[in-house]
Image 1 (tube, rainbow, N blue to C red):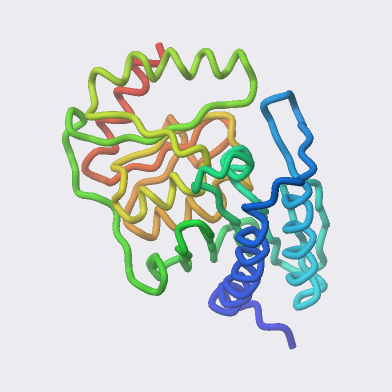
Image 2: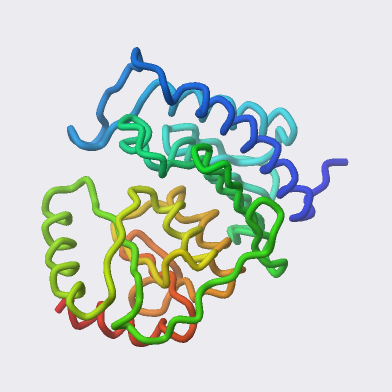
Length: 263
């Protein structure tokens, strides 16, 4: 009988993410990559994105053939079990193409629509973040926790920008209004890396709009299990309209600031 316990799902995700990270790491130095675009010229995809998604989907469904799967690069499968995997093979493809080290493989497991296990492996940093629902968050096996910063003026905040030109312009305006009121902005270029940065206290908060479930599924669980508050911009569940991950002492004030800066 196939084991549906979250701890079993996490173990499988860790094994598969390790294989995927090895494939990504071996491809970073390649100069012959096939690179194309998706929604527009700035939205890149490479042959390695497709190869990693095929590897991850193949390994997961070989072990658990009845599960569903949602992958960024088009691998969508309706399962017969209660479990669905949400996969981003390379979150931060533009970074990968330019050899900027902030890119990751992200694998989340849902049971009946709730994410119960998540893994984000960042090959260039040799870091693997993991979390179980109700079981805390770890990086390379060591427990991590969100920061304790409570003052916006001394908070380091991460964000990201859409590939859509109109949304991008609006996001830039928000950042322009927010920047004078906080310590500084960081833009890593991969939502999963940003969420894990909140989880381990490298940044105090993170916000972004225009994301898709594969961007936040694993990272949001990791940040929440590390003690961060993870919502949309109005206090609901994360959604394409907005993802906000902040330590509890800063959450309300940063959310209010974003509301003011977006008005």
